[in-house]
Length: 326
Image 1 (spheres, rainbow, N blue to C red):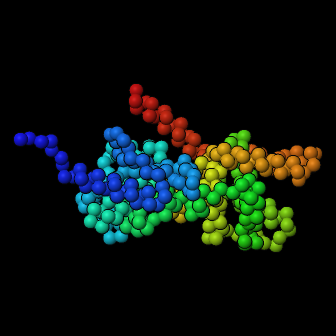
Image 2: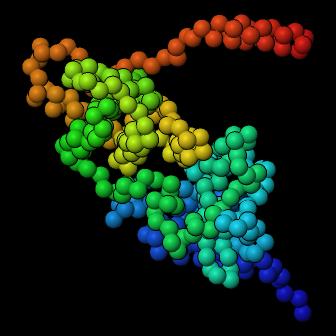
């Protein structure tokens, strides 16, 4: 008598999905398995804080079994298919690979899109490293979502938020800059976007020191960069801008430099601008200053002397490429 066949590997795969679902749920997150045939994405996980689902999502590729645990000491090497690599790099959500060890029931994770987005010449690995320290049983929500350590659910009300930003000033006298000043000076594109670059806080520090007739010059060191990194993390944690934090971390972690970015403001970020303008109306007389505190600045790429040769070479490249194609 003949009966349908079932591959033993299917048990391992399903056990892995069940283990991941259980451990993600234990973290207080929402786990949604892909209900139909997937093409490299097995599930989605949504961030929850308290009793609120925050709309932050990550996609999951789940793998279970010893064959996926290529031990490299402090991490496992995961070799995705080329088609999956291309798919994950363009996927609109961060893609996290989760490897399940059926013997220990441990689940290890890694942000695959983060590693695949690092230019190949700068990659330390030719695979996706899945570090053993990143396991669901010891992880926090922030670890899994690659979010700042500030609780993303602890959104401050507008008066408290503005107060926090005004009062958060770098402690070193050679760099007197606040979160509030950086935020309002970064507004551009009719206040719909925030442009962040190291030059903005440096200009602010120079102006503030000159206005205070300070004997200090602008000083930039490790602590300054940490303060500015904390500013970006604050914006993300308070849901004021839409920054691809995984992409941000490529510069911060891999290149040891403070990234630049142009990011759209969220509805909450635009609400903060409206609140700033309301407070401004209470603090200033109508004719005291013509410019608003929260107004756009213009962003443009500047022309450097070295660009002259580059412009010429680009034009010549176009001509030669067109001639070769003819």
